[in-house]
Length: 139
Image (cartoon, rainbow, N blue to C red; front, top):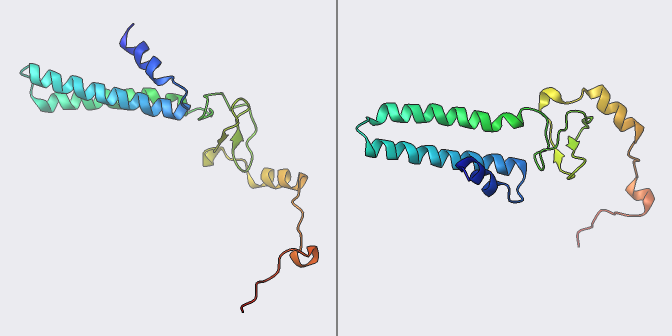
């Protein structure tokens, strides 16, 4: 079993997609830091270029790991949400039920939200007419 499949096996233990991405980023960060410090300790390479190469490798690795989050996907299970219509509160995943917020540039315009809310208006209830809530009095 190679390192990549063992990391994948360790990460895929009932976590959300965002938790998996965070754990993978942490594991790769620790691995790159350990490899860099071991390389500096065992060879005569100075630490400045080694840390520079490690920083570039870490930036490229984290960028590659987070590519999955650029598309509209469910942060709970990873299901594709690009074909589902957004609402005022976000997009509910059809497979796991997680409510996913959408970025501001992908939010529907105010007219679409007003049209959706006018289709299902919230009735206004006067508390005094309903005989429910009364203002508390000071004793």
